[in-house]
Length: 79
Image (cartoon, rainbow, N blue to C red):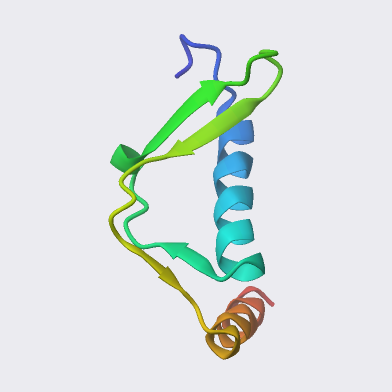
């Protein structure tokens, strides 16, 4: 990734932001998020990164109550 000019700190943010958006804002969970199911590339302008999520065989949608409970759990752990 270094040879391709990928900023690893930015990549970390992109991965975190993507999964936070999916889980906590949309309640949509990719159930197999390991490095083999993610591809990163520079966007067309070359000034940021895009995360491509692969293997769409296992997804689940969280009920609203579960999503909110999960949010409270992580808020409590982090505080």
